[in-house]
Image (cartoon, rainbow, N blue to C red; front, side, top):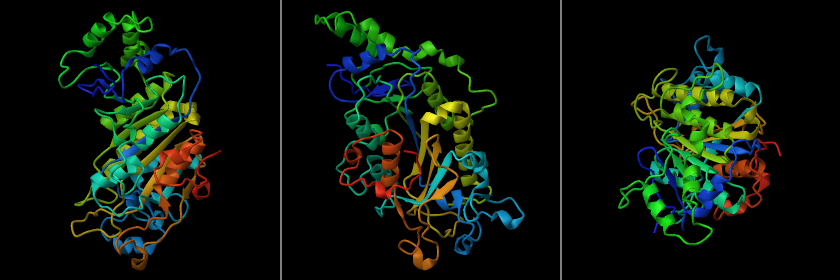
Length: 418
């Protein structure tokens, strides 16, 4: 039996779900590249490792920030040296994120500070798992929040490219009953088998369909394989970003560029997921320069390149960033920071009411810190996710996406139109 549970191998794709393949793959055959109907798209970006939100969006207006970080704090804009990029007189972007400042000024980027998971875990594995399942503290939930969105908001016209993760395997966010694709590279887009199916999956499907006498399936093998080759018709090797746009070198930049290509191809992409690692800076984190600065530079340049590359298509696109937890308010003895609690999230796109830092700021005075060490949480990440689903993707049953959590628009921050 050949099922949809086909894992990615060597730059191929994974089609993950339950049951047999034909129906959802064959819908892709019916997709017409010339169809210019534009769908709303969500791009979820996960910063794996626990990014330091306090040095990402800097509360330079609070003296307790500088008292807590004598060697790694980012100077205030009024310091007369390289410093935070002023947002509103209290918060500023790390200077490595300067490419995002123009988007913020244009009202297309919003920031939510002191946001994250209400669960107290400091385990990377558990915190990422809870955020991707959107069920903090519950380990029995096996599917992800993006998969549940796709499941509970079906689209009869959807292609198999509705949910796509850029990488070598599906993230927890997209695992579930609804098929999704893990795409390592558009150029090597293909179906391959793993485990006991060591031969190319096409051979197996050809055998399956050659033996099929059902009139619905008989003779459709060639059409199915045309669907598998669908993206190649866009000549991905010849894709070029808009004039003047350069994505940063590395996997993150390549992934963003390929997401832009998928959007421009009009093949039905609705949810895309990608991640960027390297945020766990216990030692020598750095301030203006250093490890965090380097990660933020790649992060900021990548998001800014995507924004410029998509141009007016950003009216239909929303980028949402997240990290499993923040870092301690105080730097440690190794000029780094340890696992913390609340963090910062970014939203970019046409539906965003940008140019503003949202969320209630709890303060960094010692008596205001969570467990005496961390930025306290004032916005549950599920309220941010829910506002994105309801107001950007027009999700009508958001309660089904968040197990055990009642969605209440009164908790929305008002970051999005609609």
